[in-house]
Image 1 (cartoon, helix red, strand yellow):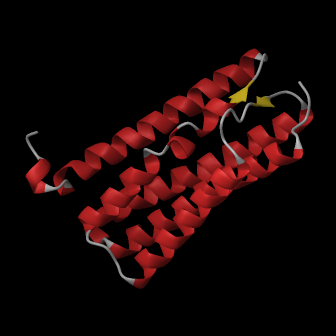
Image 2: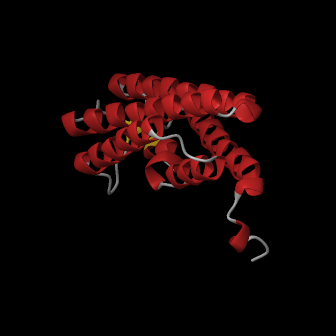
Length: 162
């Protein structure tokens, strides 16, 4: 496997950045909603962990132990998404959303393919790394599932029961 091309490196760095912005958003939510502090703090910690794992995968890709298959992802797409995250973080800090609004934003972001499938773009022929990537994909799914479950009581009342 060959090291990353320049544009691939940029994409991976941006993927790390999006995880860090989400961690900051969730840290902010933890301070905003005392009743949900533990939940948002844990999600923030997991986002930091995701960023660390992306950095690890980046290093392994640079070493040639992993490949990064960007597929249809373009640099400008990830740049736009990072900008979207930064703008939403700024809006939230300027005017705190209701818990319902916080969950709605978080679910929208977490369900985006750039976030949800971040580890799907890394591949390896090495058994250990393949196992690790599978585990990271599962952790991402569990992360989203916990968010969905926690968000249920805050869902739009008119949509409940549908």
